[in-house]
Image 1 (tube, rainbow, N blue to C red):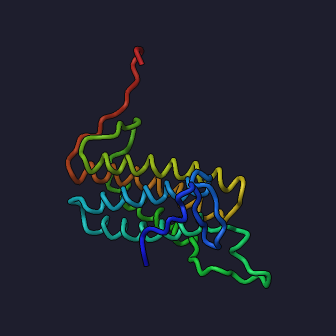
Image 2: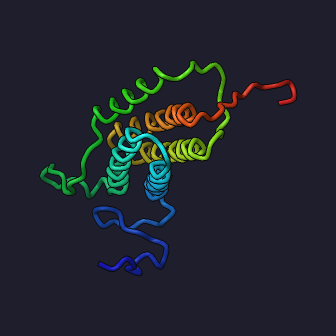
Image 3: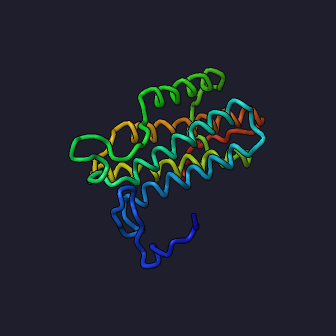
Length: 191
């Protein structure tokens, strides 16, 4: 299979199901942000962090491929006239969302109480987490816009929302692990 097909040379791309759309279509923007997020997570996983976090990130990356496939599917082509699914795409389950919640609960139990907003930074690895979190939020905004216009399984948005929270808590955990200072945002009258 060749990497280049030349079918996108005029600014369109194919969704799962064959429908062609402009490369700037909200569906492409949605799964493009999720793909970018997945790359940032790979960078975080490549850092000197604990084995458990690396395993969790790898599981999340797998789920992000599922989400990308869901977002890349033309809903009109996903179901056959018989009502059977045409494409064999996994689903995001409630247990996937619960997994992120449990991971956050476990991390938060070991973290100091948060009393202020925290400025991103303190260590390169922590900063990567904050970048991933903001890319996740962008993906969520795009996916929300898509869902408003072309609805899909609501658990996808729930997972993306929970994932951005997970990445914030992971950044705090890694700050603690790496002995990086968390700088609190304390507004002054000049702000």
